Length: 239
Ligand SMILES: Nc1nc2c(ncn2[C@@H]2O[C@H](COP(=O)(O)OP(=O)(O)OP(=O)(O)O)[C@@H](O)[C@H]2O)c(=O)[nH]1
Ligand SMILES: [Mg+2]
Image (cartoon, rainbow, N blue to C red; front, side, top):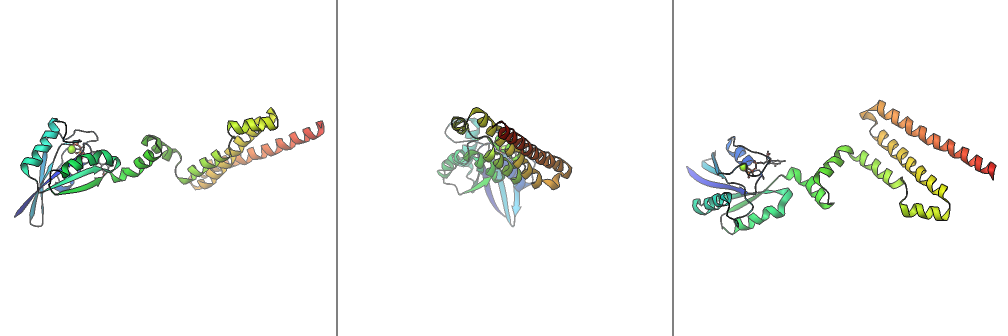
């Protein structure tokens, strides 16, 4: 029977032991922190008529500093001559992970580069793109529960109080009362419109709650209408 040796290499905490366990059916310890595997772990499985020995190396960032983990990994690759290296990369941290890949390439051993953690990469990339913490993005996703919430929030932002410069301009062109009125009026209108949008959009999730909020929003709109009518009559009378 033919025998081949595979070494799994990569940064700490990228899923090397998880792959070894999946391939060989062993139950080595995996954990969501770096340095879970500090020694090399071996396992084997059969594929057709080939016996495959898999070695899970300790997680390292490079071969430049001489820590014990790095020397275990380096010695293994240079002395045991694996037939193949499987270099696992954390897809959410490609730049850092690829540094080790360049050093592995220089060792001239056939290599497969495998992208792991691809299920996490969307959130993390999106968070990086708009320069916020991943946790913030997760919180936004949780609180906005989908598209309806996000659109409702957009509506609110679009309508609500004008910025300070615009309020100042209104004040200059008219008077303080009118500036204050438009600020309060637009904020309430923004709340009414976004609430109506959100509650109608998610009505089936909680019909009773939505019906209550829709009535409150329509009631508020009615109240604004009545008070505007009342105020305009008073203005006409006083004029
Ligand atoms: N979300 C996600 N988690 C993964 C994936 N692969 C592994 N994990 C988790 O990532 C953590 C680290 O996995 P390990 O297999 O211990 O990683 P390792 O590379 O052996 O880590 P060290 O031994 O510390 O170098 C564990 O909690 C795994 O369950 C993946 O594709 N997606
Ligand atoms: Mg491990």
